[in-house]
Image 1 (cartoon, rainbow, N blue to C red):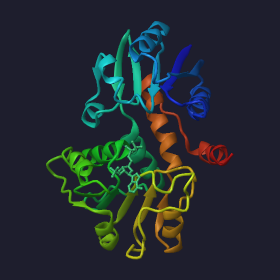
Image 2: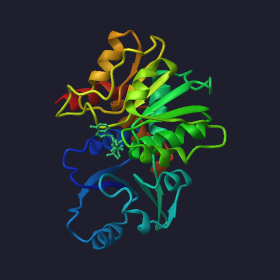
Image 3: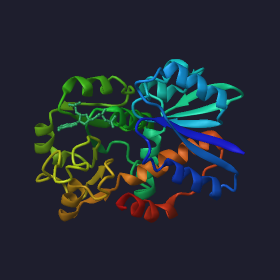
Amino acid sequence: MYHFGLIGYPIRHSLSPWIHGRFLAKAELQGSYELFEIDPALSFESEIKKLRDLNLDGFNVTVPFKETILPYLDEIDQEAEAIGAVNTVVNKRGKWIGYNTDGKGYIRSLVNKYPFIFDEKSKAILLIGAGGAARGIYYALTSLGCKHIDIANRTAESALSIASLASDSTRTNILSINEAEVELSNYDLIIQTTSVGMKPYPERTIMQLDHLKKTSIVSDIVYQPIETKILREAQNRDAFIHFGHTMLLYQAQYAFEIWTNKRVLVNDMDEELKQLLKG
Ligand code: ATR
């Protein structure tokens, strides 16, 4: 029997119990996935102690504890350490080891839709936003060997901090949102990671796509709504698009793999997840 869970706040509407419940069934494993909502007003230390006593096999960590959890880990994976945040913990013989599945999960979801996308490492990539998710995605892209990844963000300092994660072979320019809007035709892949366009303001969009090339891919990690305004506009301009909800499935796939050593297929869950998100 496996026992998994999620810590965060608020998490009552999390889809993770549904996703991992399906994964357990697919992998023909017995187990459970429980929500452990931790009120940020309580002592995190004593809540974590209670969690340790439960001896879970693994758990996910979400907002606002992805950084708070770091001092309570026994080991941290290199990628999570570079990103400075953990969203998955595995219990290996009583030792808690922290991982971050955002970046690899994102890459898996993109490669599933566009299998040859990273065959050409010199594709020009524009990352819009410089929050936690952007950090994970940037790290994964530079680890893959992508040579040109620019970052556009409202606040230049956060973008600069992400650019410091670059490997030797990655070139990164920092742009303002307006500069990126004008330079958009330079990019083959545009990844939108800000919260702009998310419910309850789905009519908002981070930038206009007047300069978008038809051959480019526009990817948005926002999944509420599933089809954001920027994706609709990209589609109207005959560009390629990539939906954010698929990242949810693939980062969970990678977490489940860390816990059980089994990689489940997730393609058949896409439609059902869309319906759940719409509901
Ligand atoms: P996450 O961890 O989910 O990626 P986050 O850390 O809150 O989220 O990051 C949010 C991102 O959205 C940031 O890049 C933020 O820009 P700043 O670094 O300038 O704060 C961006 N963002 C949020 N609201 C925005 C807005 N109205 N206009 C432009 N950027 C916005």
